[in-house]
Image 1: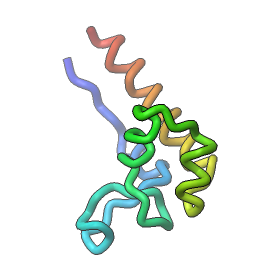
Image 2: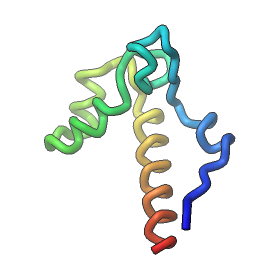
Image 3: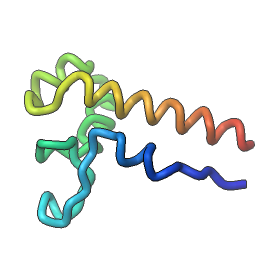
Image 4: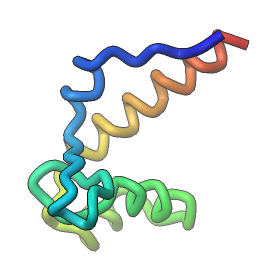
Length: 81
């Protein structure tokens, strides 16, 4: 089985992929902060508040939208098993 993520789900995320910005690395829209920085920081035990202090161009809403999408996607993947 495979998971289908609709185009509108992707375009509604606060993420930009532009070859002119960090070589096309997915970044939070309106910033140069890679989305992977959030995941790496959380994995290292950094709180969301600390992340936002370290990356002030990223909004709490952006972080929460990415986490909500990640959670929903993981739930969908687990239902396929």
